[in-house]
Image 1 (cartoon, protein in one colour):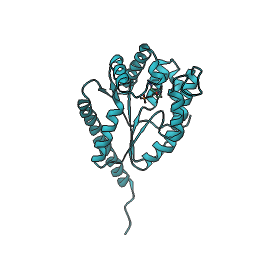
Image 2: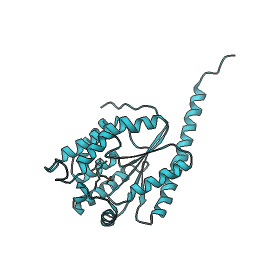
Image 3: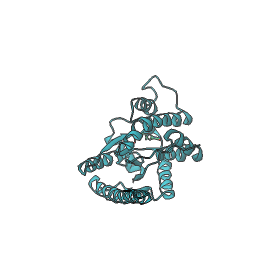
Image 4: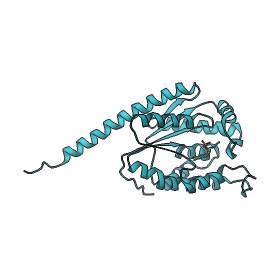
Length: 241
Ligand code: ATM
């Protein structure tokens, strides 16, 4: 499939991890810090982020019996709903924010589809990558922070702090273990983009590590951008007087 990529000045940073890994807390802290540093920041999440995508999220995560949707959800239905939500989200929120030069912080993105629907549910990874490309138009995160915690600790945290248990919270520990190993495999395959961060220490300590990784990344991004501008200037013919 042909990939349409627009030139853009913003950056997409995604947070990934198993349930209870602390990614939502860390995303919020990072957003505050970046705003203090003068960046324009958009905080968003998946599935969700637009009115339509949030409605899809309700269907996806509601336990049988909560909505009129009572029959078990097939893996195909699950992935198609997730990608339908992603398409709305990328088109109506993420791409416009990137075009406007914002840093977009997204709580889960396409790696979650590979980890949950691929490594854990068993859907074909190559097919999922292609479907992701359909939903995103080829948009990939510039940086991904993978917060790592053992499944058991994540589930305990989640049960303690979550307002409500969702449909996927009721999956077995083996399922969540497959998700965790899936994320590990994805990070091993793309170490430049996916940075692994230990999510077990106190949130303050994790936040320091997140800040350090993102700080290094932003410095590199600024240098690369400067290089692009300089080479564009060098390529211009000299102005005639
Ligand atoms: P949060 O709890 O992090 O908001 O994520 C909602 C659920 O959506 C999460 N489930 N649990 N447990 C993982 C699931 N999900 C997928 O299965 N695939 C995806 O592509 C995304 C973005 C989320």
